Image (cartoon, rainbow, N blue to C red; front, top):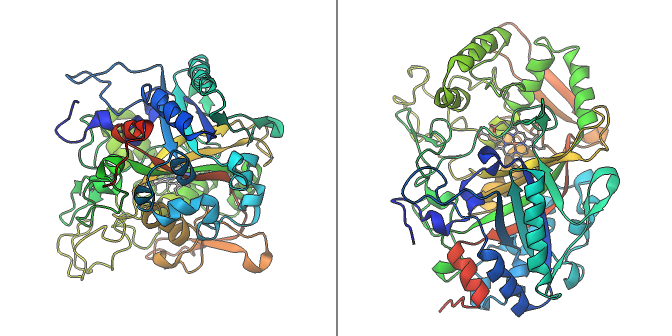
Amino acid sequence: MIVTKELDLLDIQGNVLRVYGRFRYPVARYVFLNLRDSAKGRAFVGAVTGRVTTSANWGPGPDQVPQPDWTVNIAFTYQGLKELELPRTSLIGFSPEFVAGMKGRKDILGDDGPSSPQYWDPIWRENRETREQDVHVFISLNAHTKGLLEDGYAWLKGVIEATQGGVVLLSGHLGDNHAVMDYQDGQAVMENGQPSAKEHFGYTDGIGDPVFEGLPRGSASVLGRGKQMADGSWAPLAVGEFLLGHIDEAQEYPPAPNPILLSRNGTYMVYRKLHENVGTFNAYLDEHAKHFPGGKELLAAKFVGRWRDNGAPLVKAPDQASKAAFDAQLAAADPQGQDALLSSFTYDDDMSGGRCPFSAHIRRINPRASLEFTRDPTDVPGSLKVSKDAFDTPGALTNRRRILRRGLPYGEVKDPTRDDGNHGIIIMILNVDINRQFEFVQQQWINYGNDFKAANDKEILLGNHSADERFASKAVIQVDPNGDDPPYFLSKIPRLVETRGGDYFFVPSMTALRMIAKGLVDPT
Ligand code: HEM
């Protein structure tokens, strides 16, 4: 076993540490399976484990392994782990929200109205009603090309067939024209014939992803991605926020099932299919752009906190003129410099939200240190060094709410004036504590504004905005408190994103996969 100085990369599944899209894998297929026979199910896990992509180094270096044409990763629902006959003493160690599953947590998640489970894709709607329809296993395939993806899928179908009915592929994903598909495909949005980092509302995505201790050399820079320190520097987050069996930000081991070999280097994954109402988004943006003083693109940037074309952060480029200067800097920078320009920022000089509104997507989801008490006005601007407040620990309220993001857009926008096409995002959120991390962000920060001094205002893009006029959503686009402009009010915000299904999964380490496959999970 190759153990790097930091993390055991050969033991950690590749989708945990890598954003595959950045490694030239612009297409993916997500497949969900039902286990009909425990022994055959374990044999299936064994056969897949031999092909699972780990986090081992693909770059130059002593521990290098060849980069595959297509990748394979596997995860299980709680029901799946039961079917695989994990001992009861191990099963009781999994978290209650994982046991309940995503549908069971709909009220916490705000999956109501058009996001209610009754409208989800059939595979998610129907599971848990009979054992034969339960989703037990998740397999993801990512590939360089569509042709290679089909190779991976043919391999997978072969492994499923070899179980002679012991493992069954579940159909029920809605595709183009509501066709019912055997799998969920994901693919990068194409621009000029090339895969891009865009999603269907036109934003540049996939910039911010937390950096934690022990990541392989050459990983993304810690600036803006790690945690803010009192002296203004950035440090990697604790591994235990993202991988079980490691110390977390509270200097503790996160709760995990026994034995330690089952949980260590594993994590939990939230799989969500999110439909984007592209027609409604465009119409709402156009309507408000007629009145918003800064113009359409600035307004679109205010929804997210970054400009659509290149992801320039509003805190650094708050208007057209500063954006032009930022773009010139970005164009002149090398890739490392570009990374720092796009990621390395705080909200320290924007505590009033005049640049990046409190209800913008990235500010709600990762508020950085902006939720701490106000700093002493005599502080050096931009520095937390001489704070006289109770808090000299910037990020104390956010460091335990960080999440890793994986996934790709799905479908294509064929008519930008309509909502009913097949287009959205498959998002996979990885964290060690679904309740403390993902669910908290979703419930408290996306669907409720109190922590941001924004009362009931929801996050603009993802909020579960109501169609009922009595509960209509609004959001405030704050302005410079020292200027003369009035704030801008977004009224009657429509539901821009709708949940179409998903569930909670456990992503085991390679060691755990081998133990599960051999029926050797022994909690004593
Ligand atoms: C259709 C749905 C969504 C769209 C269109 C979307 C779009 C975006 C965009 C454009 C960015 C800015 C680029 C970047 O910083 O990487 C972003 C950032 C981010 N999004 Fe989303 N997103 C969606 C759903 C979600 C969900 C459901 C979550 C988790 C609950 C999430 C978590 C994040 C995080 C953690 C960041 C980085 C924030 C930071 O560190 O500053 N997104 N998203």
